[in-house]
Length: 387
Ligand SMILES: Nc1nc2c(ncn2[C@@H]2O[C@H](COP(=O)(O)OP(=O)(O)OP(=O)(O)O)[C@@H](O)[C@H]2O)c(=O)[nH]1
Image 1 (cartoon, rainbow, N blue to C red):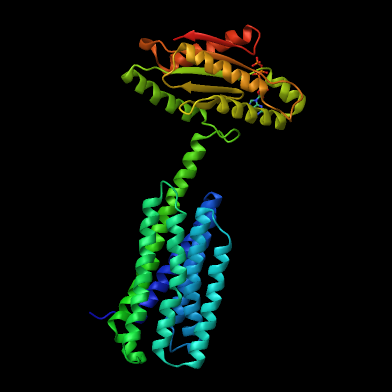
Image 2 (cartoon, helix red, strand yellow; image 1 turned 180 degrees about the horizontal axis):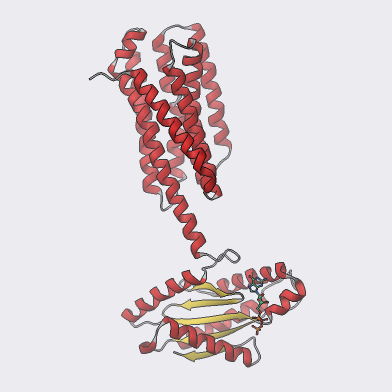
C-alpha cells in the first residue's frame, strides 16, 4: 500500500478549511458560549489548514516557509483547538497563554534546527515531539474539564488526541532508530506516511467530536432556557407542571401522595408602584430565596405566574404540609430586604392529598381556592384544603 504524503497533506488542508469556513459562517447564530467556542475551533481548523498547505507546498515555497512556519502553524492549530475546548468548558486562563507561548518556543526550535542542522531526521523528531505537550494539555483539559452529559463524547475526543500523541511519539522513535533520511526515503517511509494519515484523521475526527460536544452544550443550554424562569432561576410553569405530573403519577403507584402550596406575595402591585419594577424584581428573587431556604431537599418550586409560586412537597401529608407552609411564610417575613422599606409577606394556599382524587388539576384548583381564602382572610396566612 502506498500513501502519498503530499496528497494526504493537501486533503488535510482542504478538509480543515471547509470546517473552518462552516464554523465561521454559522457560529453567530448560536448562544454566546457555543458561538465563542465555534469561532475558536474555526481558527484552529483555519490554522491547521494553513499549516498543512505550507507543508504541502514544500519545494514550491522556500523551505523556511514550508518547514519552519508550516510546522509552527500546525502546532498553533492544536494550541487554538485547546483554547476552543477551554472556551467551551468556560475555563480559560493562564494555561491558554502557556499553550500560545509554547507555539513561539516551537518556532524558535524549528528555526534553530533548520539553520544549524540540515539533517532531516532531527527536524522530524522535533516536529513529532514538540506538538506532544500541546496534545497533552488537550487530553488533560478533556479529562478534567468535561461535565456531565457530554463526558462520553469528550472522552472520544480525548482518545483521538491521545492516539495522535502516541503516533507522534512512535514517529519520533522510529526516526531515532533509522539512518539518515533524505526527502525521497522520507516520502516512501511507511511510518512517515502513516503519521500524515493520522494527522489528517485527527483533524477530521476531532472536528466531528467537537461538533457533537457543541451539540450537547447547546441542548443543555436550550433545555435550561426552556425549563427555567430567567428572573428567579427556578422552574418555569411548564417544567414545574411536568415534574409535578411525574411525582403525582409515581404517588398513584406508591400511595404516598404529595401536597401542593400556592404562594402569592401580598400587595405586590403596591411594592412595584412605590419602589419601581427593579425593586419589585429584587423582592421576587428574595422571596424565592426564602422559599428555597425553607424547603426540604425533595421539594421543588416553580414560578406559576407574576408573583405567584407553586411548591410541590412529595410524600407529604396534611400536618407536615401545614408545617412547611408556616415555616415558609415565617422565612419570607424575616428575610432581610434592602430594596424596599416595608415588610413583605406571602399568603399560602395548601392542597393536601386525598388518595383517590389526587390529580394535578385538582390540586392546583384546591390550592388556588385555599389561597383565595387566605387573601380574603386578611393575607399573610396559610389556609389548607383537601383535594
Ligand atoms: N417587578 C415585577 N412585577 C411583576 C412581575 N410579574 C408580575 N408583576 C406585577 O405583580 C403585580 C401583581 O399585582 P396583583 O395581581 O394586583 O396582586 P397584588 O398587588 O400582590 O395583590 P394581592 O395578591 O391581592 O395581595 C402586578 O403589578 C404585576 O405587574 C415581574 O416579573 N416583576
